[in-house]
Image 1 (cartoon, rainbow, N blue to C red):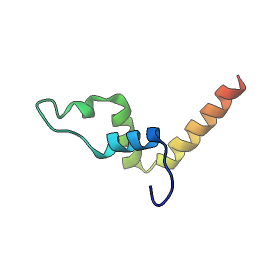
Image 2: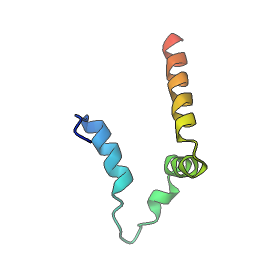
Image 3: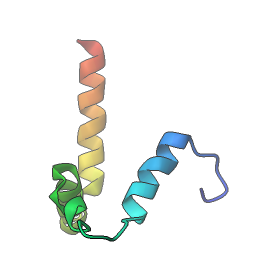
Image 4: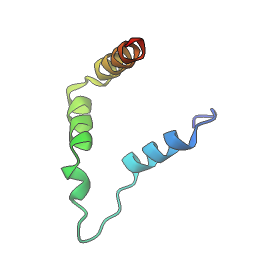
Length: 64
């Protein structure tokens, strides 16, 4: 991505966010709590704060 190598897991996550197949249950991605939180964080402009919090949480868990 952007002339940089990317792992398969990164590409899968990007694909989930960019591609939403439409059909009889096309609204179901909106029912995902993770998807709802990501949309709210993006709308609030809090994406960087969320990432900082996630990094701190992971660091704390590694020390436990």
